[in-house]
Image: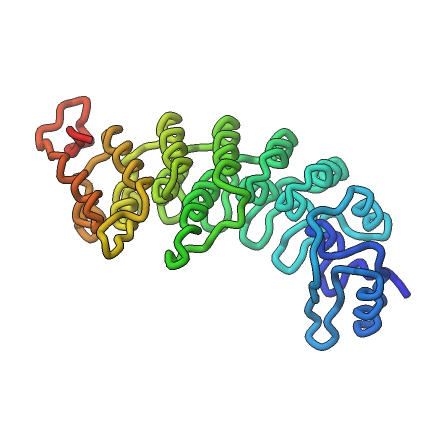
Length: 327
């Protein structure tokens, strides 16, 4: 009988952090007895005998620092990663286990370690609305403007999470749903990141910005975030590599139902606000389409048609020729 600390690169410390292993079980090196013994002792992890896959039965929300210390004393590597490149610190941050986060960092865990997607522990904490963990990681030197493989900053990722959280209400939207505690927690992370110097205009590899993403969401928190980002200097008319602006994203992404009504008023409110801040209706994407041309929702079309184009920009508006005169 022996404790299995590392099985084919899947470190028990990582599993423990996310609540997939119970230390009351002693796993043997042989798969079949291990599974039987684990079940007998209430373990939450066992080794599948044929395909070497980990078998999960139940889960627990958090492990204690004492459990993590016990694993480390048994030889678990504090910097080891699983097959996705996730470290114990990343998993503790994802779970919002602040005590374990603090212990791991104080024990030498690297805050800037990256998984295979380029995510750090701070990305996990912010995307999953774990504000206390995020604040602590930043206090210990975590970089707020780090980028993943897609060139996305943490703020950009959180903005996408805000939009996706609002998409969750529509089962047919076809968008991935962020597994988060809610939009309010994400908004707190947005404020935290910006207060620590996150660049509100940073674009990903496709030219998309945080404003472009969050404006697509539907709800009061999305509008709050749009207003906050603009108040901190976010540019309303930035175009991505396809020439798309935040206003175009809103216009083209709004579904309409048989009664012709919008999914909700959230996106319309975001569009009105961007127009009030000088969003340019005359800008065109690479296909030559303006926001008005892309709009399909009657309410949005009505708002856009109440705006007129002034072909004689003055010096103060030299970069804009379209503006809303009635919102």
